[in-house]
Image (cartoon, rainbow, N blue to C red; front, side, top):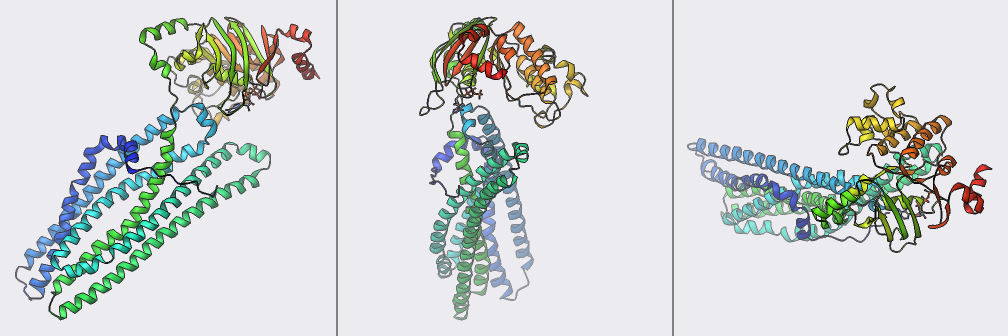
Length: 594
Ligand SMILES: Nc1ncnc2c1ncn2[C@@H]1O[C@H](COP(=O)(O)OP(=O)(O)OP(=O)(O)O)[C@@H](O)[C@H]1O
């Protein structure tokens, strides 16, 4: 964890290609922000020039006459510079906000369309960090880092040109500091970038761990695992602070070194300038103008380093975010490759369920992994009820995941109404099934929202009908506000059985003929058991069902029981025939009875 991975940095061109779509739409605003820059540059040069005039012409010459004119001029320059700087800040920050808003929306849209396998591998917290603190780092850098730096560099160059016209010797003394500053910033900048990148990576891991721990906090407390959980979080946090304090050290070192160099060069200029004045080779006004301008040059040079730090943070954040763009989306090229006529024909073929056939299906989760389904063959027709039975890890859920196209790379054939599943767009497949999953996730929204999930074509009447179908209406109508009753996080203000029924109603709301049922394994109390059993009985009476079945009653009601072991079908038949066979299933039932 504390060891940073090898840092791979994108080129500026790659960054630009990736992120310019969020900047270009607001190019006019950015331009408006840049327009006042030449005015600022002009005012920055005009100010020391005016100081020199006032000192040499008016003060040294002890002339009060005409002073009002110079003071008016210098005031105008200051006011114009102030307005130019403010409008630069306003427009640039506004443009940066728009860019960040679009980027955040675009990133969330991408994340929603990532394949399921991405979420198998990536902790939620690291996605969260990318969408929050990484974006924040970029926002900060865009508004006060990159763009401010462009302005400061222009002002510095203009001032140096101006200074060289009034005294090239003093300018030369000033320029002595340029090479060491450049060299030091280059070296420290690289170190800073590596350190920032590592700290952002650890922060994202730490957020991931935090999110998981909070999600599982009840389990942690139940099993007295608080100390261990805290210890692991400490490790992440310490690693983060180690990288952060390293970055701070480099940052502060950079600041201190540059401050030291600029102070020494200021001393040199005063010493050399005073010597020249005494030798009558330089006017007092020029030295005062010089010293006053030096500050204007040194401040941007000093800020330059903190701007660099902010840009480094942003580059590290961009690199993190880049990983979201490197991740391919779940493309449904089937939908794209079908002509409208083909699509219509497929829609009519899949209007309602007729048949499903698995033929010699092999599947593994990754190319290097071992097969979790090996030559699975079975079929069912409209109205059939099939129970998938088998020990844990035998491949039952995998069969449902293939059917819902959660994973697509199967070998062999899966035909829905005679159409090969891999040729059917996911959108059509989703409409085809009602999936009741074991794990229930409820949003902190109303019951109606949780059933309908704002899916296209699901009306309020449809939501109520679905609830009625699984007998959830009985308890929902008794709740304060009924269907508008707001659930707490993950339905914690409902009982386990009620949560299951809401999820069941959610599955049934799509009104599909084919129900995929992943029965909960955890034992529930008998009241809940009865509530759920009634819902299942209703579904069994009217729909075609493929059930991962754990209850004996569900299994016995099935027309066909498929027994899986290590990804292979080892037995097939009805409850009675399999009991008669006296094989794996008979043993299973026998051991459940004991
Ligand atoms: N996302 C995944 N990535 C890699 N392997 C997986 C993944 N999901 C499941 N597996 C593996 O595939 C095999 C079959 O898993 P599956 O979830 O289909 O089993 P199951 O029969 O439904 O088990 P259970 O009854 O415990 O839910 C298991 O060995 C499991 O470890």
